[in-house]
Image (spheres, rainbow, N blue to C red):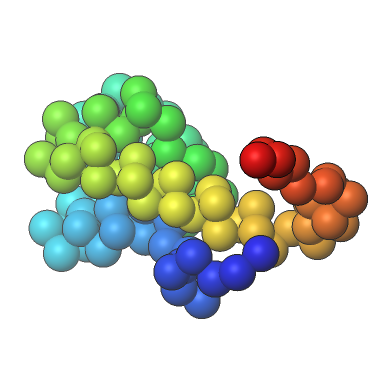
Length: 103
């Protein structure tokens, strides 16, 4: 597989959100309470240990006015880059033959 324009490091959307709340002076606990989520869920997302879902992206959008679509785009890129580095998946991908149309 060639390089499809992906950078060397994936950015989890939690990193962006964590920077945003730090810049605004909002604590993770305050954000969790505002969103109706547990502190541990918010903390795990902000520290990249839990994926962002469409539901939580919309909740962050409601609380912080950060576009949910942009957050989900980051999550998708993060997921793809993480999968591309998964050596067990790469081994499986190597065994799958290409199917090409015959003209």
